[in-house]
Amino acid sequence: MQNASQFSKNGVFRLQKIGEIYKDYMKHLSWPAIDPVNVMDIGCADGEVSTKILYPLLPKNCKEFICTDVDNGMVEHCKSLKVDDKVSFKQLDITAQTLPDQYKKRFNFLFSSYCFTSVRNFRQALVNSNQLLKSNGEFLFFFMYKKNHLLTTYRRLNEIEAWRPYTQEFADFVPHFSSADPDKEAKQLLKDTGFNAISNEFRNDCYYDATARCHLGIYLSVDTIRLRVPKEKRKQYDEDFRRILSEETAIDFLKEDKLDEVADLHIPTVILTARKQE
Ligand SMILES: C[S@@+](CC[C@H](N)C(=O)[O-])C[C@H]1O[C@@H](n2cnc3c(N)ncnc32)[C@H](O)[C@@H]1O
Image (cartoon, rainbow, N blue to C red; front, side):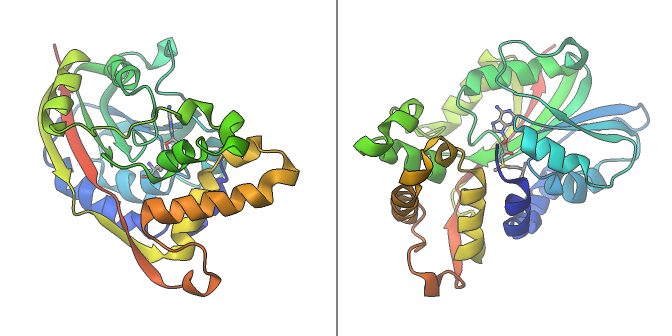
């Protein structure tokens, strides 16, 4: 389980920038004027983006807003947030082989911010997202492409004998859209999974600024591999994890006196909007 309160405490810095992306892109969607609308947020984590950023941007005819995450710790944390009756929090793996029937063809709109960064079976996640949507339903989602600081850290930890048993599934990890033509790759993938692309933008100049301590706090809060490592080996794991993560992010997490300095974290971000094919 991830540490939802640690994630929440350290992650305030992301809210403004994610809000700007949502505001910019909301206008690409065809929101119906009066009909009631069902909405899902995929990968809601601590629920801060869902409830403080996304929900206030949804028009009044939003009838239900279901916020989902694969991690039960995150979902339980969200349930303690006070929002109105239209909003609920549920556990859902967007890469599951089969989706619960009650969610199929239920939603007019899906949203997702930075969840697909860490989704391994991207194609299955898109097939499932398509199944969640009603006919002509629309999906606005964005995530890190070409880089993935955490999972490439795991891939490098897998090269160290001591951590190999705990990181096997990352041995061949490649970040999403690492090909020479990510635009073509995105369009093809959307088409193959039953979507018509509405817009896509690859923002290579996307940076999130916060203290190094906050950036590190976020990574530590979602580092579930550490929990697999026996307690007596964790000191060494922590050292290796921080050293490699510093190299992957280009932020110094090793020197205590540098942790309160503000650091720009480069998060190349792809923003996609797509409509379910008829
Ligand atoms: C970086 S957080 C982003 C959270 C939030 N949307 C935001 O913008 O701050 C990614 C979240 O995606 C969730 N996630 C990862 N894989 C998932 C999956 N297969 N299905 C659903 N959620 C997933 C993680 O548990 C995590 O809470």
